[in-house]
Length: 258
Length: 329
Image (tube, rainbow over all chains, first blue to last red):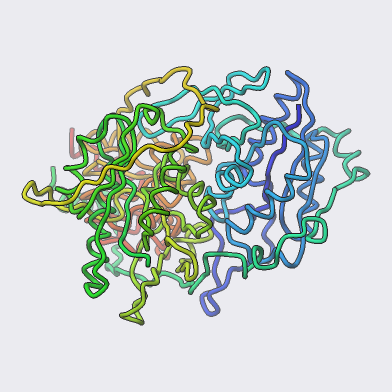
């Protein structure tokens, strides 16, 4: 069985600071990590591998330095990694990204594709379902438990706001995972050591041959019109108070509503 | 020619989700801002035995409702639902298509976007027609970006429909009005049912004791309360409210994700939001800034939470809550 896990390298923070003068993000000195929902996807794939036997391939799209994340994936025990990288891919929105990744995946073998639900630097949760559509695969997003996998079927539990559903899905299929799904293992020293000798496969657009109209900024249906820092909407006077006085102020404000 | 604003009307347990009604009303507001376009608000209702709900969608402001009611649609299946929506889009050419930012909406909308090759913006917090051009049909969709420290306005100029998902509680629904009249259009189920996903069992969720999105009073804690979670709970009981939390407490494993307030958690709009030891990163404030009254307590007088607060108290939240609780004994 072949499992592809889609992963993204993201800044290790959900609270990027903004340069208030230029309105741009301050990226200096920010460490990068495997996106948490994707890390859960890698862990899920490795558990299936241990139980049922599988080849696990991690695929990412990003700049060349995303290779360090793929080495980390080797350190966790995955079998193969692929970096999809090309200057022509820069500026892609979710749909253009999905087209590129779907094209890359067509060059690989798979029974199951696992994507993290969403990346902490974008929070869109769109790439998984879009790739499922582009590859005509059944999809289950927001998977919180994998209960069974055998003979061409995977059984998963997903929840909506009101119910949980246990679903039986015919493979090939795509699922998206929540970071709550599991706790990722630590890297294995031997695997980390060996990871430096392992090959990170690279695909650029000479390999994928996507039409320039379909990728990058040009191939993205959505555009960023403007970015801005939110203007302060309210300004109340700050009161430095001891606990008793503070409790008085709060009780007074609450009183009409209790 | 593309026209009209379509809203996907989500149904759970034979009940329309509030967020869908909120979007119907928002769509009406958008149309009223551009009367010359002659657009209508169209609800899209898909499922099994849901036809009875079409009138409700009209009572809440839709001019038309397209209904696709079929036995094969009883279990939500992304592929079948997306295929139906594709058919509806091809037939009616909507200019705009909005979805609730629910688990279902965020599963369905991206699949539709890839199917009809159009753009989609997730988790919009504001939607308006291009404010600089009164003849423009371009929708300016604003969402928090990068953890919410930056806002981005996204447009989709050359692809139709323009699509967005929007969370619950961001917009308000209209008052239900049974005198409203509208048109109900039946849409024939004409796809080959995909059976790749079957239901093993439906599990009723253990009824959560709290639903913070409906709470009138929320006592919310941040990193500054990490060693005093029980104090938040005690205060919430005293005030007959619910406990909320910022991402910090969820990440530390101190509170469940179900009570997280913020861009990646829930959006809340209580009468009173008591923010205790929460610094107020935009990630958090994006989910609570529409509360009627915000009372913020923080030891750091430069904490950004004070920028959105109606009452700003510089002090130790734990001590203050402790004192507050003694008043209810």
